[in-house]
Image 1 (cartoon, helix red, strand yellow):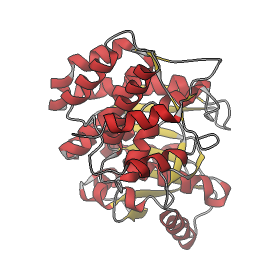
Image 2 (cartoon, helix red, strand yellow):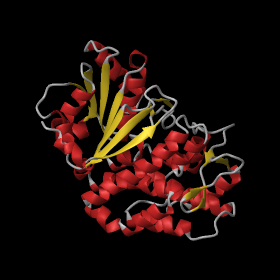
Image 3 (cartoon, helix red, strand yellow):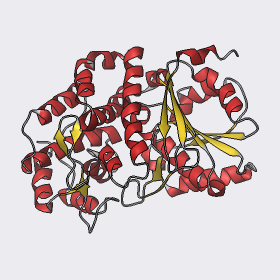
Image 4 (cartoon, helix red, strand yellow):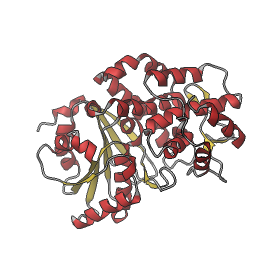
Amino acid sequence: MTGDWKISLKTLSVAVPAVSQGEYDISIGTGYLSHLWPELNRRYNGRELFVVTDSAVAGAGHLETLLAGRAAKTYVIDPPGESSKQMQTVTAILEEMEKQFLGRDSVIIALGGGTVGDIAGFAAALFKRGVPVVQIPTTTVSQADSAIGGKTGVDSSLSKNAFGAFWQPSAVYIDTATLATLDDLQYRAGLAESVKHAAIMDARYFAYLEGAVDALQRKEPATLEHLAMENCRIKASVVTEDPMEKNKRRILNYGHTIGHAVESAGGYSLLHGEAVAIGMVAAGRIEKELGLVKDDRLDRIQRLLTALGLPTRIPRTYSKRALSDLLRRDKKAVGGRPRFVLLESLGRALQRNGQWAHQVDPKIIETIIPRILAG
């Protein structure tokens, strides 16, 4: 293997001063997954590679493409999806690594979407007090967001992402060709994270998304590569400044506070991106209640989400009481009151008194929830 495939990759470095490696690279390209295994062996020469994936990713052929007939130690999460994002799955992975006589010289390779990346990253943070993890995201949501930044974790029986750790990846490899195997719903849902990034950080990127709807629906490779690069650029800039989410990194939770509650309240019947889309609209309505809106940004956000096939309202069957209780359990709540990321304008998150996440009067939340329930 000559390695010529690397010529076409775009790269972006993420500086993380709070972790020992200090920096890691994100490589972005199309159709290079089949060449990656020799590169990983070269990069981690002498270390044992352990692949964590799930049955959906393996069934789509991505594990076979990555290994290209080579033998490797693997763990396949089954069933795929949020139902397996539990401590029991992490424990099973750790015990399998023990059974395989793996040690601190091992490297976990996370091949899959956001759930796989979260579980595998958390396992890497715990195994032998920490081993490297390489993220190979295969979905729109993971390529846009969850594979970058080092947030790992699993759900509790009561709320989403209740247990976890910050564990930065050693490297991230994004092959946009993997998106071709996603079903339409999974693909569209992940685009919500792109809308989020544009809304909080880059009005020009938002305008680009408005004009790229048709190309995104066709999954044009050049558009998908540009999307990945823009998302990684935005997230990397935030993570570099605030790797441990002490303040500014909270802006990446735009749409996620109510979004996470919606996910949990529906038993994860809605995909993460669908719930985040609803959460962004909810945040926009909070902004209106607070008198922060002097432009048409909420209308533009709703139009773009609708054009991308994403929901903007909570299903009518969801319990208002359950949503309120889940918001009080939000992991970033203070005194049982969640904090919300809001916009100052399209492309700029609101900062007040040096803070990027804001307490909102519970009465406003109680007012908002009925308004975004589907009619």
